[in-house]
Amino acid sequence: MERYYRVLELEPGATLEEVNQAYKDLVFVWHPDRIPKDNLRLQKKAQEKLQAINEAREKLRSFNVKHQSIYHSSPVKQPVQHKKPSPSTSQPPKQSSDLSGKDFSRSNLSNKDLSGRNLSYANLSGADLSDTFMHKVNLRGANLSEANLFRANLLLADMREANLRSANLIGADLSGADLRGADLTGARIRSGERLLVKLIGANLAGAIMPDGVIHG
Figure 1 (cartoon, helix red, strand yellow):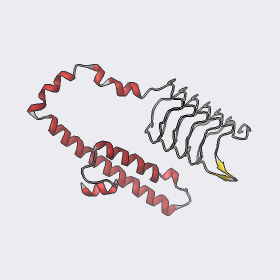
Figure 2 (cartoon, rainbow, N blue to C red):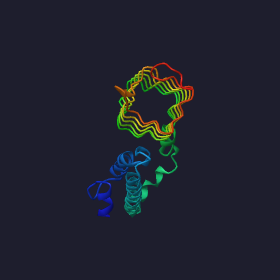
Figure 3 (cartoon, rainbow, N blue to C red):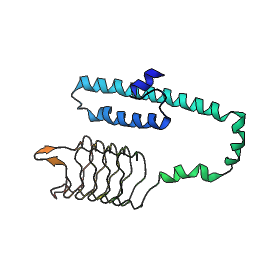
Figure 4 (cartoon, rainbow, N blue to C red):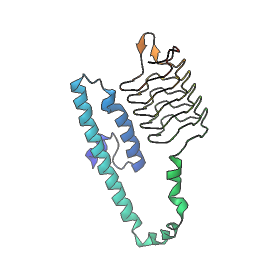
């Protein structure tokens, strides 16, 4: 088990929450989509790293779940069965994944994991989303004007018709994102002549680019 902790750069005995966070951080760093396709050596290394990271997380999660089940199976803990009939104990996580139309303007969401969440038509204007993990997030029609998306992971995100006016996209990974009809007027995507946003495989059809030109 110590080897798996080392793979995730954790000390032995780390909590399940720490395991999950370390996994997300390392996937963000070593995801093959972040590596140039023509760099075969780094691509191979990224694949190997990802495989080791996935294996470590699964082993440590199983280890933690096993120990938790042993702990909760103790006769002393039997009375907690009265919690099972309550539907509210299981429903909040499902409800929290749907954040469509919510107001998060000026909120600090830096380093949060919003992957897979439904944030369609949400108000995220001026929000701090730096280093946020948003793989496959639904941001269709969302207001992200003046939001800070520095180094945000938006792999395969649905950002159709999103308002990204004057947003900071420096260092963001938008590989595979659907940006059809999005408005990026005034968005920060480069330093001088150097493009600093990853757009590999992104769909920009009909999007308004930072200079105001509609992408054909």
